[in-house]
Length: 75
Image (cartoon, rainbow, N blue to C red):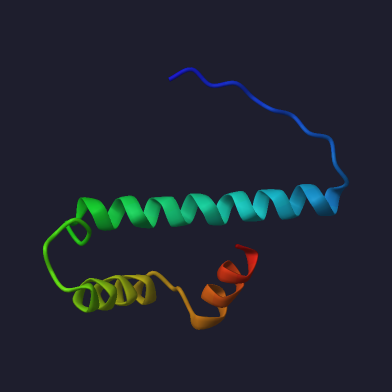
């Protein structure tokens, strides 16, 4: 896939916020892909079981209720 850079000139605060949100999105994508590769997504198990496993994995990776709340607030 061919890529192209997009440059934006903003104040430092806006640029920092953009980079922070972009980093969070990348982390979420990596977590989803990791869960998929481990077979935690796409199996025929109950939603409750899958959610429990995802929750445990997120906790092990350092996701706290406060971080989750902040991520959801940004959406």
